[in-house]
Amino acid sequence: MFVKSYKIVAPRRFEVYIEEIVNKEGEAVVAIDTAAICKADLRYYLGNREKRILDLKYPMNLLHEAVGYVIKDKTGTFNVGDRVVLVPNLIIECDENCLHKVCKIPELGENYCPMARFASSNYNGFSRAALSYPVRNLVMVPANIPSPVSVFSELISVANSIVRRIKWNDEGIIAIWGDGVLGYILCCVLKLVMKSKVLVVGKHYDKMEMFPADVFYHVDDPSIKNENFTVAVECVGGNNAEKAINSIIDNIVPGGKIVLSGVTESKVPINTRKILEKGITIYGVTRSNIQDFIKGIEYLKNEKFMRNISRLIIDEYKVNNIEDYYRVFEKEAINQKLGKYVIKFIF
Image (spheres, helix red, strand yellow):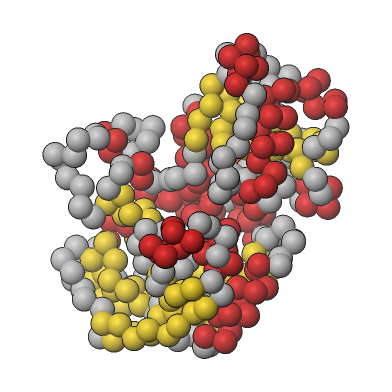
């Protein structure tokens, strides 16, 4: 079976590939139906990483947020026509003899194994008509959850991994730094599963007002320190990560926990003296596992939660050819709204 795919071969340059699908043992053939563009995809598209790294990545299929439907499954795990979310975190070469043993640590799991592969990063992503994919990395999507909403499962899974890793209780105040998509989804998850007060710190009131949070603060508001929050999650990344992280360090209570979830390509200077003085614990969480995806689908069964996530859909954009594919990347590259353009592939 031969299928069409779109690969990035240089900054702002895609090419059409025709490739054969080899249906391996333990895998199902999945047709890609719906997808979304991540900030990481944009970095590859715009060439916003070191040339040395980009040269190692190209050519590559982008996109790791995707939903498809099963067209063949010799394992009998799924039926033909079943809709599934594709979990982009893959363990291909690692086994029980692995020296790192990361897979045995529940807080981390296989996604932090040095042998792990991640679609659209060090492994081909989902910008293709169909692919053979491990059934253990496919999660069923119920019929009442629309594909454009379920495509946000990857980010929901990351939000769940943050909750899971930090082991919050409901007694403290939780702060989210960042008014983007991940911050919004994390806020939705927290309000679904926690009773804690949730505050959001950002630059744009029009975005923050969409969050189901208890209170909002502008990044430059000095009264943030009066909140006495015990946990803070940085969802900013990029050029503003330094200011966000140091602001959290300044304002969090002694003994607090900081979660870094924003990605930046540059080294970020932070106030280590104050970290030591306050006894702050710092976690790095951008990766989720299969169980986080399963949990995310369970969250989407909640009607209020699903409605909140659906607000992130700016528009559904049909991609019939490579020209359309260029256009949606360009639209997402300049997007300043809270949300994403969801891609509907028509190969």
